[in-house]
Amino acid sequence: MIGQVAKHLRILRSFARIGWIRKSQFRWEFFNQVIMDLLYYASHIFVFEILYAFEGGGGLPGWDLAAIRVFLGLVFVHDGFGMVWLGQGWHFGEDLKKGNLDPLRLRPAQPVLLYFFQRFSPEGLTNLLLGLGYLSWAIFSAGIELTPLLALLVAWALALAFFWETVLYVLWSCAEFWFTNSDLGRFANISIGVAGDRPVDIYHRYVRRLLLFVLPTGAATWVPATLILGRLGPTAALGYTVFSLAFGFGVFRFWRFGFRRYESAMG
Amino acid sequence: MTLARHMRLLAVAVDYEFRKVAVFRVGFLVREVLNGVVEPLVMIAVYHAIYSQSTAASLGGWSYDEIVQYMLVVMFCRKVIIHNRALDVSTQIFEGYFTKYLVMPFRFTVLPVARWVQYTLLQLGVAGILWTIGALALPDVWPRPVSGVAAAQALTLCLIGSFCIFEMHLIVHLLAFWLDVVWSLLVMSNFITSFVSGAIMPVSQMPAALRDAFVWMFPYWAVCAPIEIFLGRLGTADFVRGLWVLALSLFALDLLRRFVWARGRHRFAGSGM
Image (cartoon, rainbow over all chains, first blue to last red; front, side, top):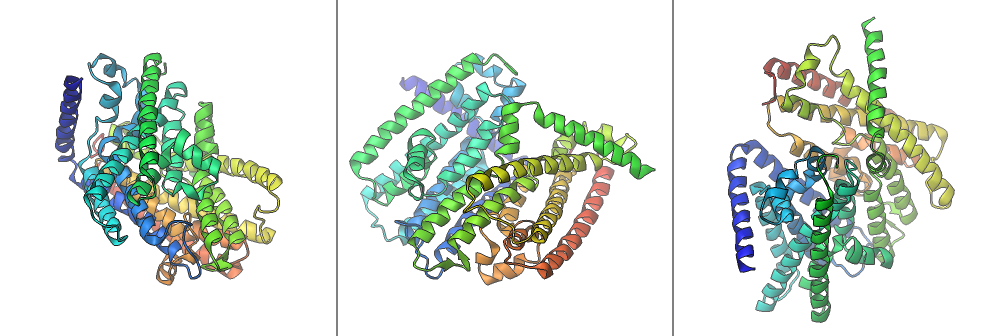
């Protein structure tokens, strides 16, 4: 077990090294991608700052401006993690169609890790660090007391956000095994992902449950944010973490089932 | 004579573009029918939560009913306006199979224009069907144009605005003659266009400085202004102003596209970069 973990960590280190080498050849693109993500972050910040500045408006129920900034910090950080490690996921439908997944069958390692983590992005890492900076500022300006417990909660929240980001990329791609060239994975990643970029308690309770337990985009943002803000009790946090692990590993198994079923290009 | 030949080519290319999008049925549903629908619905949920918390009848000059109607029309504008993944000119340049178009006796631009025509016709059809379903299912909340003239003016601005955005995307694709990757520029232009056009929230709800700047930019006249004309918040004088802004933008974008194309072709050596 430990040997398997160590082997996969070595693979990740190799992917990171290759990512640095690859990106050193595309310097212009490095800056483009950093600016691109900064524009994405800026549009989110602008929208909420404007919505909270309305005269007579009270913002979102249960979310004052300080709390919504912590939430946005989590949105940026989970997106940053996806940009650093999971960029290949955006090409899944195309790779499947062209038969590019075939070599994964021959590699003695987990195909989910080999496929989704193969494209390490240094520019994504830059944006992840900027996202972490915004999150730290948001936590600090929210007046949350800086204690060892808070550090533990932040670490827990980030682990949940990163785990769920991975699970969601894998989950969305599963549909492509059955509906080749449908763009369903990309559509789900963008469209259902947008729903999770807003606090899920603004939705009707059925939609909220859907976004926390069935198509759980809220798990990568809302749950970690409420954990940091101290709104999720220890029992609920532990319970949701257990659910996250069960759901996540279920999704990985389901992906491997789809991968075994898939025969090759257009299979 | 040449124009007639190019129009015939355009018609044939549009026909092939239609066949291409209809091949994969689930892909057709996702790409052509559901495209642009979710984001405005999420914003309606955000606005619903904000207005339920508010003590004022209107926020930023918009009542709750008005903002819901605005976001519903945004859904249709987003469908009709061409998106940043619709073209593949940069891939053709990178991979070199673009070369064959340069030795054929027609203007290459006819092919991307054919895609814009196919995309617009298809999305107008889909939007018409969805609009009818929405109006029948939710007659009380569904937005209605203040007049037939206003609806025609709104559609005119939206379509010309879509063509401006198409020209902008085409220019970014042609940068593949110099750059090794252009998708980040396309995504960037998409973020900026979405924000400036009012596809996320009405420009009139934004601070005055942003509002005053955005009314001089073509994306505003592709989404926000047409919707405000449709709902009766802006009038014919604004429509005429919008036509001027769009016409000048289109002229400038077309000149720029021709310049980039000429310089790029001069540099092209069989594959991009």
